Length: 119
Image 1 (cartoon, rainbow, N blue to C red):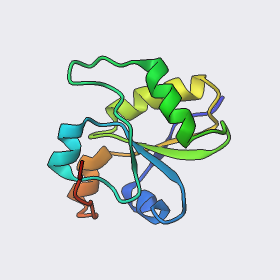
Image 2 (tube, rainbow, N blue to C red):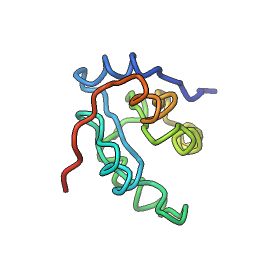
Image 3 (cartoon, one colour):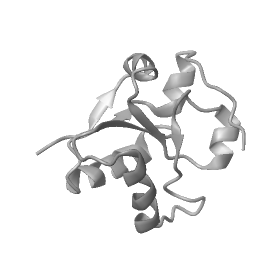
Image 4 (cartoon, one colour):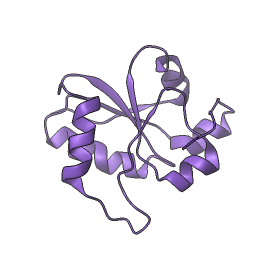
């Protein structure tokens, strides 16, 4: 069985320009607070109450990741939400599921670049 891959920020940083799909699942208020990683797609999973609409989210996700063999990277604040979601996606047959280890918090601690979130 496939496992969720933990990717260190320095590895994800190299993937930014490689056409690897990066999906930031945080909320809009979080994007505004920290900025976002260049070229990442913004697709909130959990709302502020911790609730989600899996069917709606999956329909948007499948537009970004149409092939279950495709490599993609999930991003959240501390890698807790992405670990849960990544394990779910693996159970759905996605073979190359990874996430940003330490989330955007570690990314910023390592002084890696974010860009301003604009509506």
